[in-house]
Image (tube, rainbow, N blue to C red):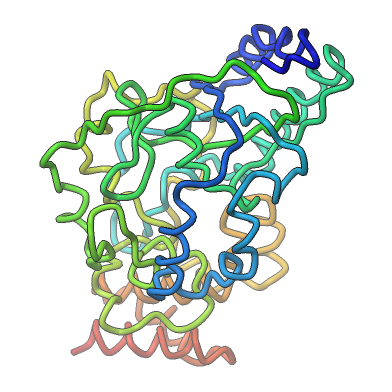
Length: 348
């Protein structure tokens, strides 16, 4: 506890209660210390495993300490927010699979930031002298390291944070404060044992070693972040994934046990799978109107068309040929080439 302010942290019980009311399923507190994983991050970048995500190298020094995000940070409250963990719907020809986190159709950054703002107001009302900042996924923080330090779980061999009660189907958010708080005990045990299910199941061999991800081979990176043509040798491994991938989570025993799954409200889930052919008949304005507030917006229409072409090629259904032939005439060569590849694969 911060001795200069004996009341710092008096608001914590109310904070935890409100966080639970807002849907967060776990919360822990870690001290703001120099990042133990910084050296590993540097090695990961130098190995080329960050692929085209240049923002890691561009902001590298900021990852050393939470001060790089908010000066004077002394404590970090790490929060877990669940996303759908139910069984994936069967995918038929012409439909593409979508990573579970995107199923609700709303950008999770917006959803969680709104909740963090409510928590920020709570602290401001209870302790106006305390400075805070809420972050989700975009700030230069090693969230999974912080989550382990805060006692929320351990790092799996697929690099994701695992929790014995909630598996890995959850987002992480960090709430930075400039006072010392009562810290939770770090999660010191690893419950993966000798299991290598996630490593063995990856369709594109994206794990060069346990706990190390090569983003340049990861289906999630390739279908969401990658802005260029997807290497031909990785396309068949993409299977029916048009946006993201959950394979390394689906095979994890900690996610496959129903009692361990995070329970989420049965909200509308318009993006459980996608009509692939529709994207070749859709113009930019329609795509924007339909997906502007969804995770798909990050990939843009050209990226979704590229992905859709690859999935259609993998599915091999002749009924997709008219749409692919239209796509092969696309003025965007990345899209046109993917469509030509798919046509060749279907007709060979």
